[in-house]
Structures are given as C-alpha cells and as structure tokens.
Length: 179
Image (cartoon, rainbow, N blue to C red; front, side, top):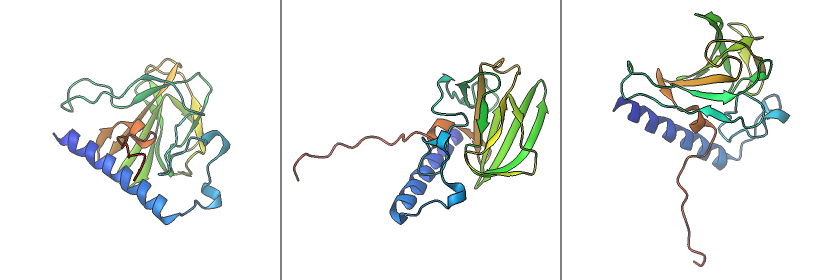
C-alpha cells in the first residue's frame, strides 16, 4: 500500500513539474542546457545515465514488501568503459566500492536519490554535478558483469521506477476531430 502511494506521489510530482515548466515557458540556463548526448532529455530535466536511449535488459520490479526479493531499479545495456552521465543535477554522496562492485549515489534534492552500479566514478563524494555531466564509466562488477548498469532511484526512501522520470507515462486522451 505504501509503495503504491509513493508511486502515485512520484507520478503526480512529475506531472506537476512538467506542467509548471510548460506553462512558464522557462528555459534552462546556458550551463544547464542539454548536452548533445542527452538529446532525449525530458521537460523535468531527467536524462538516461547512458548515451542515447539504452535498452532496458531488466525492468523495475518492486516487491509487495520491502524485505521480499525484487528488482529495485532498471538494468540498462552497456559495455565496460561506456560513459555514465548524471541523470539529474545533484551532489555525489557516495563513490566507492560496496561489497564487490563500484557504486555511485547522487542526491538530487527533494527526496530523490540515484544509485548507479557498477560505475567507476570520476566524480568524488561531495562534488556537485549537472544533469548530463559525465560522472564515471561502466566498470566490472557482480551485478551486471560489465554488460549493463543498474540504475535505482529512491523518492523519500522508497524505490520508484526510474523510467517514470524519463518517459511520459500519462494515458493518451483522444479528442474529437471536430469541435
């Protein structure tokens, strides 16, 4: 129940941000303008952490209860050495080895935190990074064995599907051809 509420909250927040940006007609400051590799940037500023639109090799699968098995993020097809980019502006809070793989965590504020693994970081804990800035490269690690990166996003401590931050998941509304 708590998970569904968090997911609804995330969807509502994304819709509100998108609508506010569209209504204001605001443009991003030059230093935050989308980079060439991030041409698929969304109106809310989130981007894929890899160049282009990577293939999802393992989708998000949140368990009904926090202690049950599941997949709390998405695996994105990648090769060892591929560049990894910040999916949103934030501060790197962790960039080191966790158990058997290199992990990076970025705190984006407003309750959003990203985790990326296995990523050999070029940004250090404490660094501020802009959306689309390179933060590391795909490394070797047990999670994907250099075939992918795992991208997890938490909103107020609850895992959400990162794809919801990129793709417009709102339902299509058909309008009549003639008023």
